Length: 305
Image (cartoon, rainbow, N blue to C red; front, top):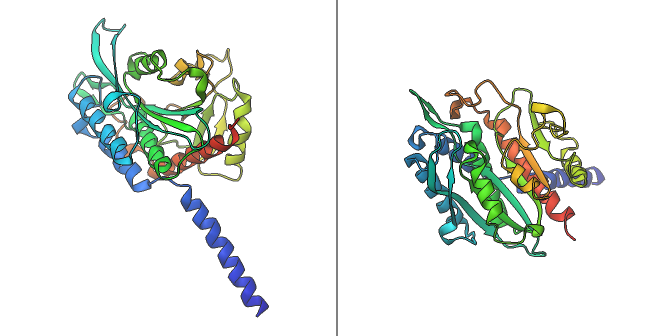
């Protein structure tokens, strides 16, 4: 009898841990479907103001609407103009797509973002940008889906940024026209290239500048081997190995807003026509987004005043 009770207890504990693990996962099927569509030839590489970019905007807005997200911007859209310093062209009505979930315990905000633009047509080649950065955009939508069902303590803003490849223009516009005082932002989470790495490594960049964020990440990473959460790439003076200003989080950092940038080291397909959906690593991608979700859940509790 005692052995039977002990066995039942072990089964119950294992089931509970399994249930808890499942509860802290994003919708993996939707995640893969999203990156596949965003990186498809139909979207033409999502260059700002292209037909493919407009389709990407529509897709993201419809997802936010289906999740019941609100926004501080009409139709979830923050329009902005900018001049590309490389070709001198002025782009009018580029667009960030912004969704919002109010917090249950504080008005402080966690901003979660990834840029949805890429390079588009380059000569005879279509540069589709699966890892860079359909992956970060799909991850952002997956996280929005999780927190739409599991209400966060902090308010959370989910942003698909435009024109990162043209000088972080979407992030510049967001920071310049942020709908709340920037002091309300506890941490900015940026995801840029999170769907593949041959060494099974995902970097969390920023803890050199904001060491108070590291204990939460270390706790999440403990015992987690797939992927391995790495730190670094944020030490001033380390040249190209310093990613502090490498992506959209830089615009928040320059205003003193703490950030964590999740990403992988460059691979041979970076900014080439080989960065396609077929070359992502789906199991790595799913596990990476689950790790980022666990980090967000930890920050949501640990950063309460």
